[in-house]
Image (cartoon, rainbow, N blue to C red; front, top):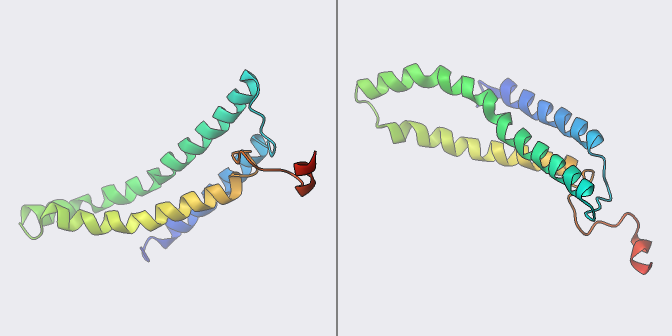
Length: 127
């Protein structure tokens, strides 16, 4: 991970940039869900969020392809079984994915209006 730290930092910066762009595109701090148009805007924001989180990991695909010759060489020479080589990499990617999702949610959750109970002012409870 230290060797590829630039890739992970770049991914986080790219995710922050896309979250800020998406937050300005779907700026709905008070998301109404009364009409079909409101629901279409809500589902557009939700679909954009899911696609961004899913396809943000495509950067790591190049790193995985880069490691394949080592994997095949160790497999052919019977050094390690495949699961012993893949599981540490898979486990190391879990915290990175959690951090990416946390950054996305921190930036977009309230701005895009995903919080159903969000009130702009505390005095709105007395209306």
